[in-house]
Structures are given as C-alpha cells and as structure tokens.
Length: 552
Image (tube, rainbow, N blue to C red):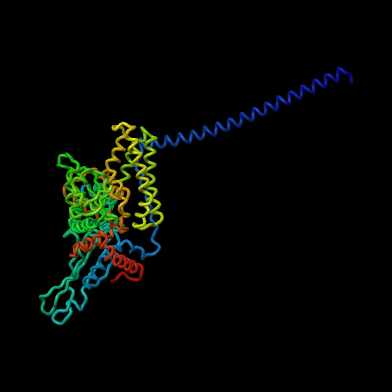
C-alpha cells in the first residue's frame, strides 16, 4: 500500500471516529431531552390534577350543597345487655326511691318508634305531647304487701297513676313512671298510692338528669342556650331557650343555699384568693346593655365562690369577706386594700402580675426587661424546686427563709438603681413603680409556707366566665346572673376536687329537694359523706344491668 493510500485510510478512520463521537453526543442530548420532557409531562399532569381538584371544590362551593354531614352507620350491639347501660342514671334514681321508702318494682324499655314529621313551628305540638319516636322507659313502683294492709287483708291494685318526664341520658327518652294504686275491698274507703320519685321542679317538663346535663353543658362547656335548643331539637324534643333558661333559674334557686354554705367554708379559712372580671348584661328589652362584674373567692383546696355586682367598687369584697380573717391573695386592685380592715386581712400580692408588667415592656427595652425577668424567675424556680421535692408547707417556709431574702434584696436594689435610668411614663418605668408600690405585699409570701407567689388560682377559676362570654356574649337578666354565680361556684369546685359535676348536681339537687341540710351538701362535705355511697350504688346498678335482671 502506498503512503498516499495509507494517509487517506487514516483520515477516513479519524472521520469515522469523529462521526461516532458526534453521534454519541447526539444520543446523550436526545436522552436528556427525553428525560426532561418526561419530567415536564409529569409536572404538567400533577398540575392538571391539582387544578381539577380546585375546580371541583370551587364548583361545589358555588353551586353545590355545602353540608359536611355524613350518615354514620352504627354496628349492632354485640351484647344485648349493653343496651341497658345508658339507663344507669335513671335506674339509680329508682333505686334511691326504693332505699328511701322500702318499695319494690321493675323497669322495662319500650323500643323507639318511627320518627314523626317535624312540625314547622314549635307551637305545633302541645306541651303535654312527647315525641313518639323516642324510646320509653317504663318504671312500675309497688308497695310491699306488708305495708298495704287494711282491715286485716292486703289492699288490691286498682290502677296506677302515670306521670311522664323527659330524661336525658345518651339520648332523649320519655320516662313513664307508674305509681300503683291500691284499694280496700272490705271498707272501700281506703286508697293507697305508691310513692313517686323526687321531682326537682313541680310539674316540670325535664327530669333531674336532664337538668343536671343542661347545667354542665351551659356553665361548664360554655354552650349558649340557643345552641342547646338546636342540639335538643335534632333529637326530637322542642325545648325553647326560654324553657332551658327558666329551668336553670329554678334549679339554681334550689341549690343557692348550698352555694351559700360553700362560701362560708371559704371565708372560715385563713388563706383565700380573690379576683374579678367583667360581663355584659342586657339592660332592657330594646337591646341596650351594661357591664357588670363577677368576683371569685377561692381557697387552697379548690373551693370556689362566685359573686356579682353592678360595679367594680367595694360592695362585693366588703360583703363577701366580712367574716374573713387571714391572708388574701389578690392582683393589687386598690379596692381590696381600701375596703378591708388591714388588722384582720393581710394582702399577698401577685408576682405573676409584676412579671407581666416587665414582659410587656420588653419590646421597648429588652435588656432591662430580661434582667427583671431573671430576678423574678429565681423566685419561681425556688418554689418549683420545693414543689418537685414534695416539701410540706413548713419545709417550704424554711427553704424560702434561707434563699429568698437574698434574691429579694438583690432585685430591690436593681429596682432602685434602674428607676433613675428610665422615664417614669415608659413601660419599664411603670413596671418598676408597680413593683415598688406593692413591695411589702409581694414579700409577704415569706411569712407562711402555704402562701403562693401568684394569684393564678383565682384567675384560672375565672376562665369559664372569660371564655363563656365569647359564646353567650350577653346575660339576660338579674336572675340569670344569680344563676350563673351558683353554677360557676359548684361546678368549678367539683372540677377542682375531681368530682363529676353532673353526678354531683343530680345527687345534691335531689337531696336538697328531699330536705337535707345544705351545709352537708357542699362539694367537700358531699364527697366525704355521700361520694362513696353514690359511687357504690351506681356500680351496683350497672352490675344489675349486666346481670340477668333489672328488677330491684
């Protein structure tokens, strides 16, 4: 092969190599384009799905129904005995009647019928008519044969007196109570009727359990009456907010003596807490309103007594604390100091309020605020250590005496120095003067290990009022304010003591109606005297429900 041919062959080889390199580059570029196009198509598909979903939501919002209700299918109960469980409260009341009068009887449940058409107006159904689709609980009460003797022979049944009342358990039911009537066939003059259960409201529409449930919903769960009205209407009973409100007023009037006894328990102690908050009430039918004040008086055991007054002046503290002698935790409101005799009431100021003042000034003067918060934090850290160590009040007093004076002295010196470096009208200046002006009361926690650094206990107790006024917004009238004070006192105390408010209100209302002394029915006394018995009776009723018979 000649040299010319060899060079041409080498050139051709190089050209082919170059062509292969270009082709590989094109393949790589094409693969990259395919991958990019695939990703783009995936993103476009995802975007299309997202837009379709938004379009569906918007179309439904514009033209479709907006309800979010769903039909919930309830599985059949595995154990037929469990159908009795919701009726434990009603059977507990009947057992109470049997224990008090020695009578006997039995209870049966009538299955619910088909729902009736809802009338357009509440007035379409008379008050004496009950919804036909609600289940019926029939209780038959009989007198023991030994107690119905006349002319040497047992009296014979001659009929029964029937009464009906709406009761609330897990659902609404109509409680039909039959009181067997007896007559003497010999003399034909004597008639004996079996005793009936205690009714909280004479000829009232609602039973004791329903009334207790409304009280808890309204004053513990902060549900306004118009929402409760709609809630009950969905189940069949048409109870107007007027009926609900008046029923609560009647029940509060029955329990008012218990609330009075509860207040006396608080003021008889030597350590109390006080605070106040506002509420809006309707002044007239034309819609005008005014502001009233709720006051809270509490003790270390969790007992709470609510009061209200037309203004924030000295009337409520003077009247409510006229018999109190000891240490009073408050937020530094001037009325507590000017209205109460300093010889019998020593004020304990709240470090949480002082701390809040410095925290509010932190936006304008972070450095000084952090220094003040550091000093106050040492006091709370000291009490936290005592709490975590489980120290007794005497031991906590000793710990405070050892470490707190040095902290207080350092913080007081800091206050005196910094007050000369800030403007009095500034946030920091006001926080410093607030603390200096209450220094003696702020340091009073050193005198007794039972005293607390803050007044948060009473502020927490006022929370139902603060949260509730956002729901019910306005109180209707004078009796409504009194009603709220009674239920806030009893329900708040029950929660603090770990008592079920509904069980307590139901049991105590029946006992008051039966003539028991209200002084023995405050949450503390009820828990000590009757709590165990009520729990035992309810457990017995449940055991009967799960057993072979519900006959007592």
